[in-house]
Image 1 (cartoon, helix red, strand yellow):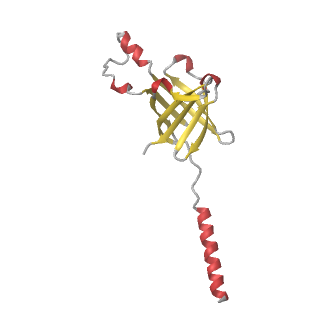
Image 2 (cartoon, rainbow, N blue to C red; image 1 turned 90 degrees about the vertical axis):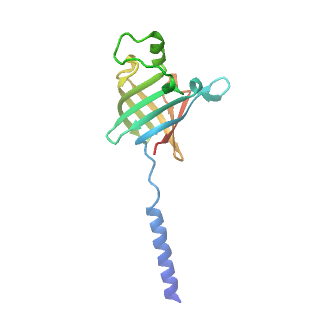
Image 3 (cartoon, helix red, strand yellow; image 1 turned 135 degrees about the vertical axis):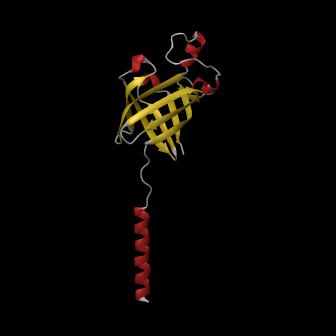
Length: 165
């Protein structure tokens, strides 16, 4: 009987040990994320609403430290507009429409201690933002990556991203 108790005890220890070793790893920001929602907080009422009526986009973090972001108004790709790239004869209406798209590429660095990711912008759709750094506080809520800009001018925004399959 003592040997049976010993075998059961060893079995339970082995099972408990294997469960500890199979704990899920910490989520990572690496991968391609699709924007689920982008909301802005009204500081007077503390109510969150969709930024510009709703945004879409993608965020990519690769394993070598590169980041790419593209945000655009919902339905941006359905405008039915066709115009040439790199041409100075684009109609004013089309030029205004292009401003509904925001993108940049660069390098990133994660501070796990502060839960902040820094984006060092190498290129940008806005020439005045070349070379600037954007910082985003982040956390995971299940399979959702939640980000809030650290800089004051955008600190009222909250972006939620889902990993693409």
